[in-house]
Length: 398
Image 1 (tube, rainbow, N blue to C red):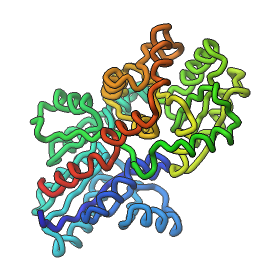
Image 2 (image 1 turned 90 degrees about the vertical axis):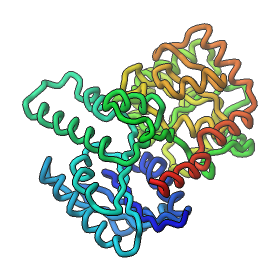
Image 3 (image 1 turned 120 degrees about the vertical axis):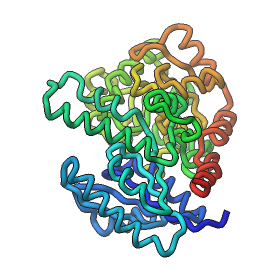
């Protein structure tokens, strides 16, 4: 379909690893498919010229920062006027202008701009955001200010979901959550799970051997890897360490590799559990994560069984599978746990502190599966490349 499209992707602050994989990499792929996309970041601090140039090189497009220190309605008006400016600049050159965001706080802005001709809107639902907010604030005193903020947040989410022409969800469970919450047509929703880039994540036997030699691991040692942040409350880092400790008690040949930017916290938790001799901590760039996943034997992904996690689709799951790793996953991550149940590429565990005898036996069975078989399934089912045709088609047709 020969339609001249301009897309603006609206996001908040830049998070180094998460933004690279979940935002910048997707923008690059869309730009390469001929749909020019500018990334707009709402931020309270200005990036250096060097950082902006690096981002623009990585996305193959423009990176624009909106410095917004305003609050509530004033902030919404400020954002709306800024996006209107970019819309007007693009109007003469494009037949369709798409605004896409993962920000539930963009409801009023979407509501106002939806009246503009040739404008389309996509809400990229990455989580049950309001459930997440409740989880983070659990235990805090409920004040009038908090009640007002929560009301605005709920109202804005309702507007951004209902005013969008399409809603992209990262899981079927999240789609069902929004369908039930707002009683909308299912045709409005599309599911794009937390996918990974096949150029960055793949299985390579030589990579595996090189890094295992670097870590001084022998063939009998079983390396469990956890990749990602640890400082977020929902990452339950203490449970990750205690779960590994239980495995190590069952079999002293188990080792743990934490690939994380949160090195200080990782080392603190390891020291508390006296696991220094059997644990490695690495802080690496996204481009180097795959090497360490290849060196491992199984990936670890644990979350509490609560609504916020039931709808989640952590990108690390795709990265693990595409690197040929079976996965230890908790049952509360509904969509991906169902994938593991179906494929047997790993084990679904019921507890967060220890593994049952049956689960342990299933884990050992999954370790015998050919790594190339797992990586091929990951490429076909969880790579961004496997979804890009569908993604572009929606952008062209809305």
